[in-house]
Length: 95
Image (cartoon, rainbow, N blue to C red; front, side, top):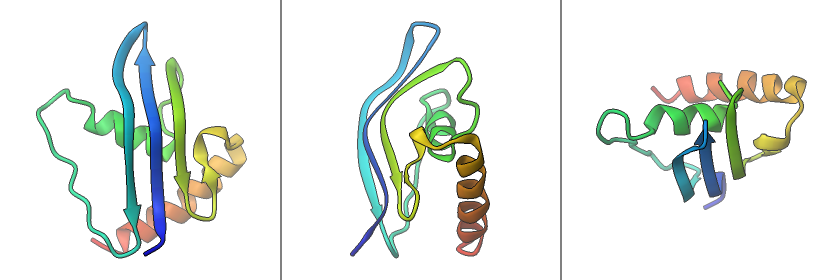
């Protein structure tokens, strides 16, 4: 199956505090993924990084590659908005 999302070497740091380090995973077409864990473990931070939200003040390294868009961490603000407008409706169709 073809990868839809690939996260490699993702590290997120805020105010010299490492929130997550060396996160790696991929999601293929047709897969269903559950993200669970204790409060404060970084679930929302990870999802916001994938969507390019609330990046100000965060040092984000690695790559988040989404099909048809490439590494979203290097997109311009206009390209990031186009990415979000495409991805969010697609995700809603599956819920």
